[in-house]
Length: 292
Length: 343
Image (tube, rainbow over all chains, first blue to last red; front, side):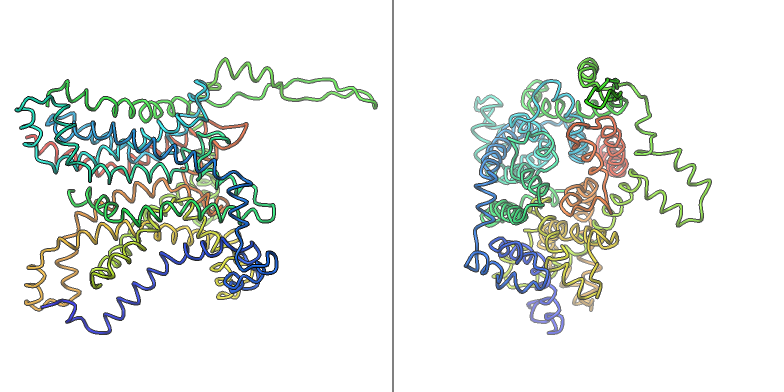
């Protein structure tokens, strides 16, 4: 007895219309911006009609072709967006690796300790998770100026790792809880130390959890604006603050299109991430929820 | 696990959190009690071809010395909290004692920076969260009816608005809502008002920001609720149907109660995230019409040569208090459950 077969046609149509509208709402802004990034400003921000952005009349007139790479060239070459991309690569990879290393250790300890303080650490982590990042940033600025460590990548990496820890701990803690205690305890009966049991018995079965948590650490570092925009100097900017600084100098003709091209370039890695890791992202989002 | 091993394992994590979360909170509280130094003025005699005149200007050298001696600025007690840019008790007292009715009170309180930000932050928090959850639930129900071949691609597209960098997502939408962008231009021709734009209309700004919020928050609820739907006991659904329950009654009496614990979790996470709403204000350049608490802190810090650390810190402390108030019910419940478990 299938549920679908008994659904009236009108309801089915309604569901499909609703889904179609949602898919348009979710995907169209991206599709439109990707398409528009290959046009000139007069087309993408056309005063007359949005149809010219589709046909590219001005782009045709100005560049001789319906598509132009001018925006990308302006962003990547003229404005050295590649530098920001390299910085972002350094920051995200370091943040993910360090977060996971110290997070798995901590999450494992929290999952295996029955003492009261483990619970309090988790509650403290929950409160820290709720802190708006910018309020913490306003605490860092002055000390960092004094210590002369403001503006460089390592500082930002460490700060992002720390801001990331509460979430990483919670998530890995719940993954470790799902692994039976017998596993590491029997390894220890066989003569392993706690750390050997952790490294040789637990980590091999934890890879799915580690990868999922790593994805979210990566996303946090990649998507951050509050920390990177305040703690990095002009030369060390990562992608997101770099885009924000494009907006500051928008008066020059064509500069908006640099920002559009930069935005599309910055979206591409996220797109690929979802494409390859959709299953892990979905399971990661639900892991905390389903286990309560 | 023995205490020693536990702390050995968790030490790096704790160290990072203490150094970069706890200490900054202390630092924010301390900073909030100071204001930046007043400008040291000196009068210099400027002699040009047309005679001499006295000019007053800032003594940069003296300022730098002062800054080096006392980097925090000068002690100011609670004045950072009480001035016009923060809690503004004096101004509120004036407004309450001398006004032309409720709308006047509202309008004038809305002109005080902190209250303007607070009102928007709370509106955003408490409108976007339930709306996004409703949208997510609706999408989850709809996707659940699809043939499995279509589920993957639909989920892929649905996740995009959530995974996107907030600043980038809001920029993409703000370009579309630009008066010469596709949605902005369409809105103008639909309403027949050629001057309608985000900059000119506070109402439109608020609506667009809320729409952005629902757009970017909805997918999270969707994913969680969709996972929850897979665990709904089919026996209960079947027996409810055999007892004559309609489609709507099944949703109302079987599915929603089953998802209720998930909904609490989603609401908690989204309230926390929405309370720090910040990037959309920058992305939509909405600061003239809508600001948020996080944006106020950012705005104080972003000034190139006159960063208002004291003011930013005071706003931060007020924001942190807000977060604690928001979390209080959750913390109280966890505390109670924990005590029950122990006893």
